[in-house]
Image (cartoon, rainbow over all chains, first blue to last red; front, side, top):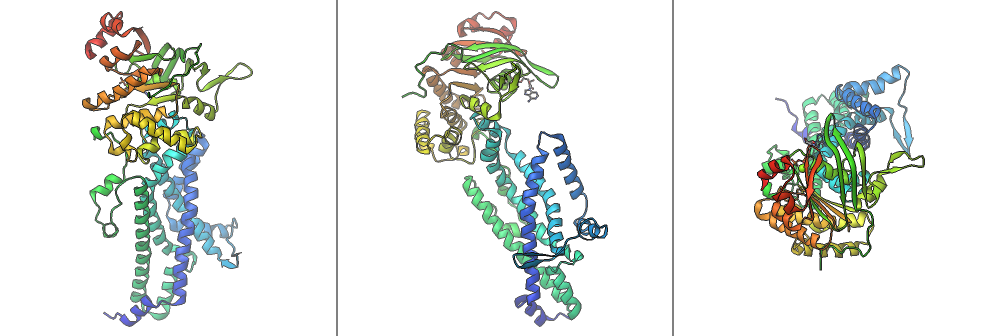
Length: 268
Length: 265
Ligand SMILES: Nc1ncnc2c1ncn2[C@@H]1O[C@H](COP(=O)(O)OP(=O)(O)OP(=O)(O)O)[C@@H](O)[C@H]1O
Ligand SMILES: [Mg+2]
């Protein structure tokens, strides 16, 4: 096997500026798309719970279409398809002195739409995981339905929502690798270009893989920190340790903590 | 020191007046015309077979359940509804309804304490965020109430670390913190181990002695005999019998009451 170790270590430890730009773009697109997706996902989840049938229908259709079609196809339709049909073209824009490529905007929109459908389901099941009695207790104490939602339901639901949201963000970071299809110069795209010019195909893609691994590992650490903070606020035991989480060993306790219901102690 | 200080004024209206209350879930007719008046300071115990509609009726009193027909007034005000200028019956705003509910304490079978808050915060949360009481005042009163239900040392723990009986006492304190004019209890001891029933009934006994108006769904016959001013028997979504506990328990008028009592006494 011809594996160029020198080239490998060099690319890994002293990556080229283009490669670092690609890495930065991957992170920025992921974070921005996720932030927007949280907002849209919450809106879709609220629509799904609305008293107005048309809103509920819209939410269901949205979730059905987005989750039922591949991200790759969605991206191509948004960027290439819309432009080809003369419907909409993503133009490069200048935002506070930074040039945002049309393809990058399309990437963010596409990932945001895709992610929001999944997030709305996470939000919905998070809200549903809170016992109905909590809402009734809040109402009986004189809270309005909105107040009960804000002060009682949401704080409890967030704890349940963070683990799946975090996992979803991990998935989102990895799926940025398909953005090369619409010509976004993110990390994978840069890697492909480098491999085409150097023919060090194996070495470069291993480096690319390791950088994705770095991103997802750092995020897992952050996510565990957030979960521990929320658990501490709720007076619950710590989330499962990072090592267990990264290497796929799931503890029984973590499963129990993920489904918090206030049970009378004597009934348990 | 008591759990409740009755006001010095006199209510001319009954605190609760329910007239011809009907309620269906789908095509199941659950409440089939309930009439009830409860005066201030009265303790009314509601009994009846499972499925009689006791819980449903209690929930209509603070409009956790909307009614299909009839009217329910608490302290002379229709709950959740009002008449507009044209004399039509319309829904009250969510804010008005919330204000009405704030005056009615509700104690649930399964406590429904807020698990993400400490015991003390469970008690002061609504006074601060709903009634806008100054926090220091609310916390002081919460501590006082907690002491009176015998749990002063549990202020800073989470509800889930308490026994069922302790949780239910906290739930009563939480409801009292809003200084309600009326307390509703839905089988407050039926989810508890037998040895914890007594501690909760003791708190309710104190509350009754202090003059709180109480409507209690309960099958605790000893407690009822001792504390209730009136026993009401529900069956098939209506009140079939009502009277002094001794009268209803020893000489029931209705055949269904006799059948029911033979099972619980
Ligand atoms: N939200 C609901 N939807 C449909 N049916 C309901 C609902 N709530 C209650 N019911 C039905 O109404 C009937 C009366 O219920 P309710 O809980 O008021 O009875 P109960 O007298 O409190 O009985 P128990 O002693 O078992 O608590 C039952 O048949 C129940 O299944
Ligand atoms: Mg019941």
